[in-house]
Image (cartoon, rainbow, N blue to C red; front, side, top):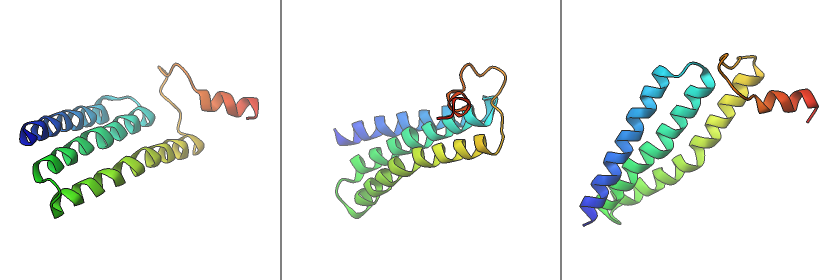
Length: 111
């Protein structure tokens, strides 16, 4: 049973990784690409690591997979936010199809 559920998590994780990599190629600007890569790492890689944990259980390999999963869950969204903010503050403009720029609107209002 654990192997079947583990395989499902691994397959779903691989699908997220695939579509995240596809987003890196297809999306028009740095902000969309950062979003795609953050989802790819957070959901895809964490799915694969959790599937590995289900395969291995509470062995040294399984514990390491859980620790890596927790590290990725904490650091990937924070680093994506930091990269996007640094790109915005350094003057990288969003693509022309961007609908909303809440950060820029807040800066204009003085918040």
